[in-house]
Length: 188
Image (tube, rainbow, N blue to C red; front, side, top):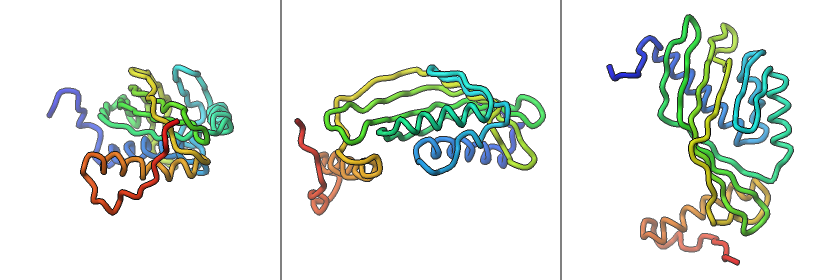
């Protein structure tokens, strides 16, 4: 067994906790995917550099306000998961998180990136499975690129990322020429 790995967390519980993390970020990135607050216990706490929010209703309101700001597309990913049994039915969860965000509909705006560490306490609810009791984000690195996102609505912006990635691979000689017709924005 490697140092730092807690083998008291079952494989089934680990898979369920991984699914909870993935669902959290999916809901952040996709409007209409459900409320992030539903993934917290009633008295759950969320702590980020931007806010400290306690209670499912307040967490719901905070994310509703964040979504209402609109005009942004985000993509989150997590990795390097470490689990430690805290006590019966509770697990401490540590992971790395990556966030990429861009404003859509406006050329020349930079792409924001953030890398951080999350420290969570999750509890096993008999009816709802694993839920967050607390989530804490610590930003480790943050910055912007000089690249501009595609024009259009957030939905069309999301669809337009695929050709951008194809173009960059084609330029590196990694994709066949039939993909050379990808739409590519002209720089201002």
